[in-house]
Image 1: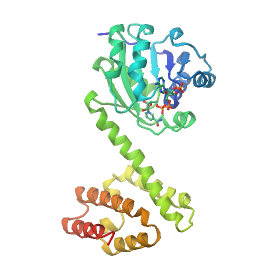
Image 2: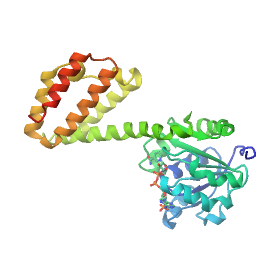
Image 3: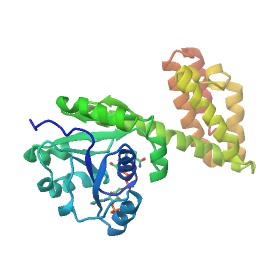
Image 4: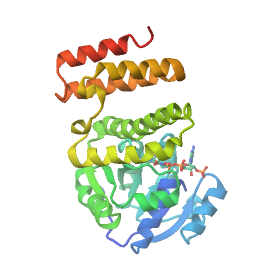
Length: 292
Ligand SMILES: NC(=O)c1ccc[n+]([C@@H]2O[C@H](COP(=O)([O-])OP(=O)(O)OC[C@H]3O[C@@H](n4cnc5c(N)ncnc54)[C@H](OP(=O)(O)O)[C@@H]3O)[C@@H](O)[C@H]2O)c1
């Protein structure tokens, strides 16, 4: 077992100047942790992050730290770990941010008696400034050896103002699947609705974004399944048939997406007990006839 993890404030090293790593470094710097330097594969990325973090861009061999933030893409973590291991001192903590991976890609650090942990922010981070704004208040999936859990919880909850949720190593893929389903599912549904409204030359985003915001608020306040509304949970097959007819006439390319989304609603409504078997069958039959 490695020696005790470092006490706060920490000296940080950022390896991989991507959006998440840079944002985490910035949030930690705001809390008084010191950034020793940043390395990235592309010198321009390191320089940009160094300016943003008021630190220096440096070769990997010149970095030092109590906490190493590996901000690289998932596939680069294990190979970078083998390059980094000689720089990391006993008791230091090395983390990555990938959702589907646990501590396995960090095994190289066992030889250095350093701690490895996977800290996955359950948030959408399209750029550094947005990530800095959104990460406080977000949940983090934490996977590490049990003696490090308290330390990770303090880092996430006290220093990053997030919610730490311990996830077993083997549960990471399912954890990540849930996050990806929600984040991309919302975007895919919005994009489908926007394309439908384009056929009417309506200001699609202005029309649909407030609706999506309301639906999310309902799901947060009342629970997602309890918030399902519309013709499927009302069992109104006639309205669904009219939707299908309109799509056949005006936007036939979107029929498969509408039917797939409706089938998902149907399954979730039935599993949550919002509709009975008869209604479920009736709606399923209308959807099955979508192309006829
Ligand atoms: N963005 C999100 O919404 C989000 C949310 C949750 C978790 N995550 C996780 O956070 C981690 C970082 O994601 P990100 O979105 O911050 O990534 P990103 O902005 O795309 O940056 C990734 C960085 O990885 C470096 N890199 C790529 N391939 C490399 C290689 N083969 N060797 C060394 N470095 C390499 C790049 O360095 P150069 O620029 O120097 O080339 C780049 O700066 C990932 O594990 C991701 O799954 C992301």
